[in-house]
Image (tube, rainbow, N blue to C red; front, side, top):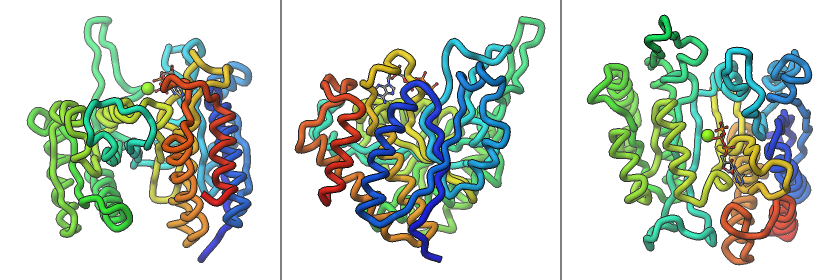
Length: 365
Ligand code: ATP
Ligand code: MG
């Protein structure tokens, strides 16, 4: 059934989450008008400050309300000085990945025209890959369960399941196919692991190849995490879709963001069978929060990912067109209008970026 009307759970959070969400809302307003979409936005508070004030990270029915929406738009939550009594960080986004089984953490790493190259190589502009971080198990399955024995020894345990590895592999093969059709990329999926040392990774690789065999049009390969850290710096333009374990994906996606100008340019989507959550790869950035200087591009590109996903699920070509328009406007703003955010040495603040991109969309970019 086609629908152009969507119910969004909007969770700005705190720190720069609030600021980048405001810029994203401006852009959302612009695509809503131009593409005749309709968004019903339900705001849900939450985060470390919410915990300090109320004793809970989210409102009591917050998760349930978010789960009933068509998509969740998330800013950033967490604050260094506000922690749980046991010292662990307040990170509702991790709980939401578990609660909604958002196994695929999709982090596109694409060079944006005009953003000063990080690598002194002419192929820098060809960087267009996607890290898919498995987000419900791996090393993070041990979160809150690790133990410290007599102050002498500490243990955390990694979990890899057949079910999630199959889901992840299917997801990545479909993504690679879709990218090949729409962007001319090679249709290659490279599992990043450490199968030479750990049985859990050997198992993951075995299940990966078994599942990938059902997608004979996809070129399935593997690469060791240490070699990948090297090659992502040396020849990132050679990679397409990179599924990997949770902790490896956490680390590699920051490396990837570094390649394209920083966290402010790295969007992400957390996808499960029934839900999708869209958020920038960065956190609340307390050091720059409240100053109006955060780069909202990652958040704005996450909105584009959300529209693409909604368009696909609900058969809305208007939503997909809106996603394209956002990407084109971002490219145009940085590539030809010399838009420069603070994180790349410029003087354009959060609101200015949001307003400029919204204006480009309104003008038919
Ligand atoms: P998390 O625990 O959620 O991963 P983190 O502690 O790794 O968070 P981030 O908030 O992701 O920290 O950001 C690290 C630093 O990068 C920030 O302190 C900030 O200086 C910079 N940064 C992050 N996001 C942006 C942005 N959108 N614009 C400008 N600078 C940013
Ligand atoms: Mg981080």
